[in-house]
Length: 368
Image 1 (cartoon, rainbow, N blue to C red):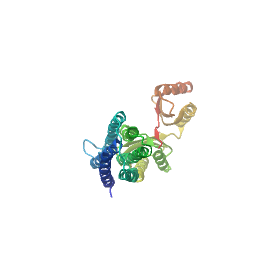
Image 2 (tube, helix red, strand yellow):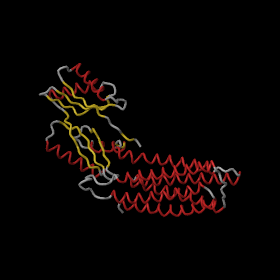
Image 3 (tube, rainbow, N blue to C red):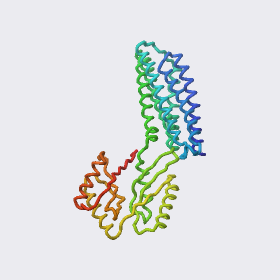
Image 4 (cartoon, rainbow, N blue to C red):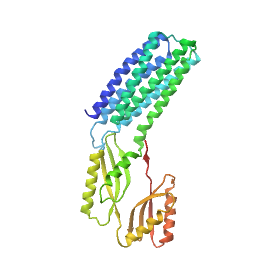
């Protein structure tokens, strides 16, 4: 079964479960006069809407590429997750307002055996549903499903708080319905804010996941002609569409034909292994003559400068007496211009007749 069909099927399971729970909770909440239970029912209805949005978003994101959207429509899934998070925030805010009103003007709720039974059933169903939907979301790499699953698990905690409120009322006749409703609301709001993080991060542009970064480098370094991998960049156009680029070091003695074969093999290999559409750039590693001697002297000097992690992309323009070099800095460097000028100053001290163009690189890895 294709990914989008699996997401839709999972969402339908969520819709059915939440409609049934919303009906039960609304009826019990009205009979008991409990704002907390009624707000739980409202939250279940928002979960139904979330599942519907997931289905619509999945359908739209599966549309093929066109002239206006040459990379496809996969990022619509991220917008779906954002909308779901906003719905959760709205539900939490509405619940908070009603709960505060309940604290200001309290009314004593009535709990029965039937009421408590429905609440307990709701907790069990929400835990099972939340774990199922979230696990499916992680398997299918769907932010929308992950958000829906996390929301369901938070609902279980929310309903557990309602059960605690009922127990305190029955045992000690203390009405904490409004207070627990407020706490429930804050939990919902917090969940909504946290759920916004992942899809927004995807749209803004994520760092390369640490495990993918190392897996890519290890795979490319298996080729004997490759002497270094640099500048790994990945752009996500949906969970199943990743387009990226990297540079490799090869000996300056390789022919254009050899380089063509190598880069083609690497691109095809990476697509088979990871499903990533990859562009491979080339840096020439100098092996002889003045170029090799100059590169050795420069890299030996730069490597001793504090905050330098690595360097690559060396090239010497003989007709211009110009050396270009990419320098990878650590995460403490924020002023690239000042750092570049400091490196040039130190290089000029030993090679005054040369000009330098130093490009400061950064690598931002996402460590989950």
